[in-house]
Every structure is written in structure tokens, then in C-alpha cells.
Length: 171
Image 1 (cartoon, helix red, strand yellow):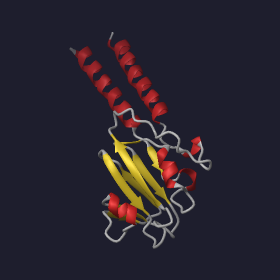
Image 2 (cartoon, helix red, strand yellow):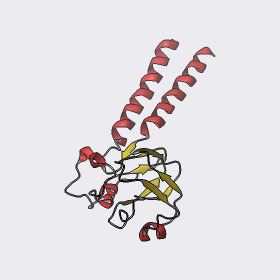
Image 3 (cartoon, rainbow, N blue to C red):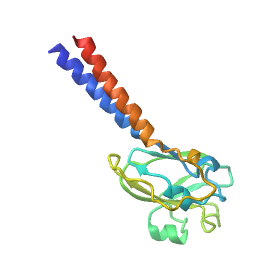
């Protein structure tokens, strides 16, 4: 009975580790951050956004982040009635459910100049991959901060390791 309890706890701990390690932080615009010079359409097409991930907006005091409530507001850059406004310069937005979210810079004229991004969030157990053919010459693999494959591998190694250690310890 004691062995079963130990194994159950270890397996559950391992599974929670896997779930935690699958979450990623996406720094908007990669190494350039939330700036006007970034092609956010190209940048976002190289990302896979999943439930549990976080968006990190890093920017100077010249900018802000507004979350828009609809595609219509996104396309027309209607930043007057945002769902949420952020202005710390290092803002984190958790992606808590599937669907499309829209973000833009709240500084007048910046959204119209392309400082906006549409984020399609898929289920955390989805195997969605970024859209092909949209990479830009200015971005590199180091700009991508998703790292799902590596984090998943580490999570599985930890889960299996916990399970094996529990077996060894129980006997």
C-alpha cells in the first residue's frame, strides 16, 4: 500500500512537471522587443502560441500595449476602447484560453504603422506548428522563445526519472 501511494505521488509530480515545462514565454518581437521596426506579422507566423504560454512585451516609455476586443478593432487600429491597457515596459500576458487575441501599441499612429500583432492560441495539448513560408530575413531562430520541443523533452525526462526513482526507492 505504501509503495502504491509513493508511486502515485511520483507519477503525478512528474506529470505536473511536464505540464509546467510545456508553457513558454514569447518575447514580442524577439530580441528587438515591442518596437516599431519589427514586422510582427512575420515574427508571429514563426511562433506557436498555446494555452498556458505567456506573452512578454518589452518596450521603452514611447510605447504601450492595448489588447483589442475584435478583429475589426485590430484591422482599423481602434485603440480607443481596449479590453486591457498595459504600460510598465515589461508586461506579461498569460494565454489562458484558446482563440485569437489582438494587441497594438496605444501610442497614436503606431498601430497604423504596423505595431500590432494577432495571436492565435491553441490548446496546450495541440501539435500545431507555425505557419510556413512567412519568415523574414531579419529574424533568426534565436529570436524565437517558444522552445516547446526542448522543454517537453526535459519534462518527460523528469517524469520518467521520478517514476524510476520511485520504483527503486519503493523496493
